[in-house]
Amino acid sequence: MKILLTGAGGQLGHAVQAVFLDHEIRASSRAQLDIAQLGAVREAIAANRPDLVLNAAAYNAVDQAEADPEAAYRGNALGPRNLALVTAAHGIPLLHVSTDYVFDGLGQRPYHEFDRPNPQSVYGTSKLAGEDAVRTLNAKHYIVRTAWVYHSVGKNFIKTMYELSHRSQVQVVKDQFGSPTYAPHLAAALAQLIETEAFGIYHFAGHGGTSRLELTQTLYELLGVGVVVEPITTDQMPRPAQRPLNAILTTLQEPHIELPPWQDGVAQFVRSL
Image 1 (spheres, rainbow, N blue to C red):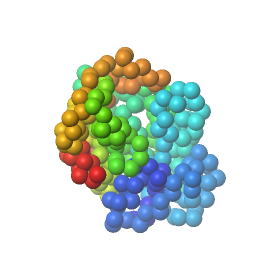
Image 2: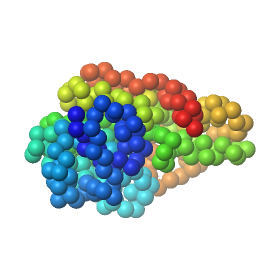
Image 3: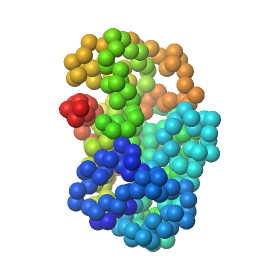
Image 4: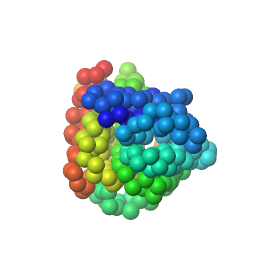
């Protein structure tokens, strides 16, 4: 299958290129293809003639989005809208990656695909707008929500904690829960999904749930370092954008594709270092 990959310079983009070995990947970074430009998207589709477009491009500056909502909507809503519009015109399936931030995080159980979104930040609202555009404009869509993605490349929470592992003590919030997702595990699940032609919305995230506190403690145990992890609350570390306190994702969707336990991802991350 010939796949046009957008956002190829990000952590998921890197993982897709490493995992999708049975496919011909035409990789485009943001510098090569700005999906917010409709003309550029039309040219890229016409030039590459892909069998599928995988959109891993996104505006991920969660806090900055509060001060610059236009940038967030260009990357997370207008870009996916353009991809959906052009792929639909050519009869091409579109796989679009979304986020746990479309939920308010107030639920007491993991969120599945049929739960109603209720984003509480500009970032989350812009990502939901992108989902809506993809779902409305291209019937051949896969929308994959994921959470707490990390890789040895790029910027992410677990890599930041690794970079702080030389300290004697770090502070980590104890009341934010989610499903840490190792990017290569996510890429492997996407590779399975595109073979099914079972279009719809999916939740792909590290199996199970944990707090940022436990995630950090697990990382440091695997690294064999004696960093003291001091638990604090979200209120003690205020940020411009509201974080969903419960961002644990689960899947009810068929085909039932489940990622490995989140602990396996952390162990593989440490081995990759």
